[in-house]
Amino acid sequence: MRKLLAGTAGLALAVGLTACQTASEAYRAPINAAKTPTAGETAPETPEQDQEQTASPSSEQEGEDIRLATREAGGGTYSGSATDYRIDDLNPGERPDLSSDEAGIWMMMDRAERKLATSGRVINDPALKDYVGKMVCDLAGDYCGDIRVYIVRKPEFNATMAPNGTMSVYSGLLLRARNEAQLATVLGHEIGHYLRRHSYQQMKDRIDKTNGLVFFRVFTAALGVPVVGDIAALGTIGSIASFGRDHEREADGYGILLMARAGYSPHEAAKIWENLNAELGDEKRSQSFFYSTHPETSERQAMLRQLADEVPVAGGDGGTIGTEAYRDALSPHWRELLADEVAKRDYGRTERLFDSLIADGFRAGAVYYYKGEMYRQRGEEGDEDLALAAYHAATQFADAPPELFKARGQIFQRKGLKAEARASYEEYVRLSPDAADRKMIEFMIGGLGS
Image 1 (tube, one colour):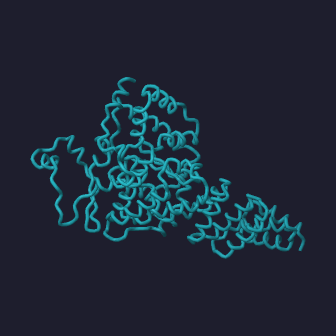
Image 2 (cartoon, rainbow, N blue to C red):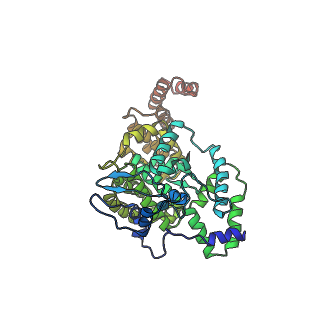
Image 3 (cartoon, one colour):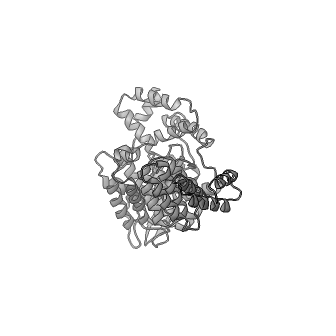
């Protein structure tokens, strides 16, 4: 144990954030580190460059000089070595030395990952997983093979990144991103946490500020508790993937850098936070774990807008937004995502989200139907009328689910409107001749008379 703690205490955070660093510097650090001169400019020579020109590189230096894919964009070039992204020289494909405390954390995360992989919360759709996984690879470059993506059925705006490369993308995030570029913002942010080893920085900082031996024992004991099921596995991964605001700012900088390198429009970065802020409305941010550990939305939106104007985009144009491809990928899961949102019973927030999705125009019939279901489930005074209005609006779209006619019939029946109820039930049976509850609905129709 003393050896582990000594190794932790001796780690030099050579490129880590400093206490005096401003918020703006934290956002800009990844981009500034990655910049090389634009066309016609000459970079000032550094001692390291002189040494590189006059000496043969050792195998260690070669490892440190592994280059991520260099992108020519907008008259400028971004290039980066492994050391631009890491606290030390842990290169793509490597794991921490087995004698280190960091390796212990990785092994604990490996255990949690195995539980998560076989849990009922993972969406095992190969097409969707491949789609998101390709985006992650485009963003991560040489680190693609080190990251394993799990799409988790959880209706929250979030994604997590464990230090061993386990990325959990929540289904609620997929519902709230409107295109590939917006999703790439969050995926790139999580990759930034991984590349900069923020989990280890966070743990090292806590050890330095507390009784290291006590902290380490408590920390490893908590992670060593047998993981019993999918929720515990998800919680174990998420508990270590919580960071301070400066780490979040730096990860935002990586997010916009990596998405621009991959050819996505950086101007979409601020929009996803604008949408989330509108969804939360006047709710207290302190009630949200996400907002308690992240910078203020107004701050990050302003910084992301600024950085979007500064960062070169691969291909030299404004970058890919990818709306249609994103909608195609989500379409098979759209109703499931909406139903999970209703099941949260966070009615005010869900209503604002659904209104935003309706305005967005994608599969609005399904959104209107689940908005009606939300009102029907809430059951407050006047909600049945709101539900009927939502169901009627759904009928104006080709993707209106047949179930809306059954739901509408039930409300009409409760209101004593027999003719309207009968017509709605009959339309449901016509549209769903193979429905499992067809016999029951036909019995109900018979009881309403002609």
